[in-house]
Image 1 (tube, one colour):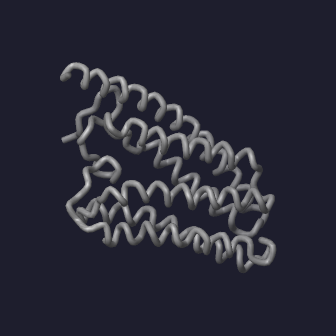
Image 2 (tube, rainbow, N blue to C red):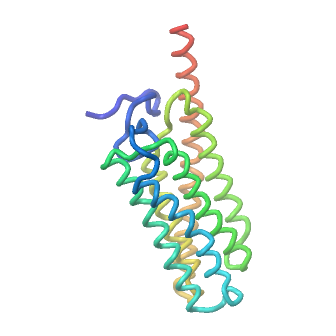
Image 3 (cartoon, rainbow, N blue to C red):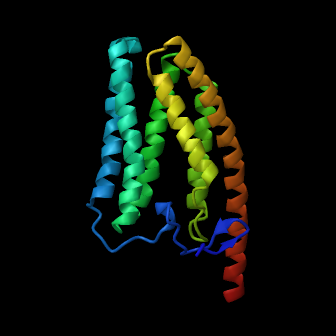
Length: 216
């Protein structure tokens, strides 16, 4: 049975099977496998940056190593959510730390690539504003309910991860062309879904305030 919705937003306290932030926390210890993977992803960020900037950022081997670290960190992003849901390991710490770890990885990657001159700064600024803005929106309306991740948001995450990974690899001609195609698609989806998140946040806040007023 599908969870009830109001104006396209998830009602408070309604769990969403594929988005941990929409689920209520479980009565389990903070020290669990899911949270361990989240912390591990955070720890990989400085390792990734060290590999990315090694030998001036132009060494082929180190760029491949940086890509491998980025890929590993991206995989843990998927794993920690699945493990948390399937094993009932969702905690308040995990719901807070998971998006922080995601933004740290994406932010470090984009800023690092721009510092090396591999990615224009405008791309980094646009994506980071969208990422930070959506995260703040979700916490801004958290007392009224949860803006669960949409399919468009998940597509954006996939495209963004693939594009960043391709830019991290050594600048082999044909790969860089593909990277730009995927990055442009990721930016387009990011802007579209960002606008949708704003609308859903406004609707959720309006519905939540009306519900609280009716029960006051």
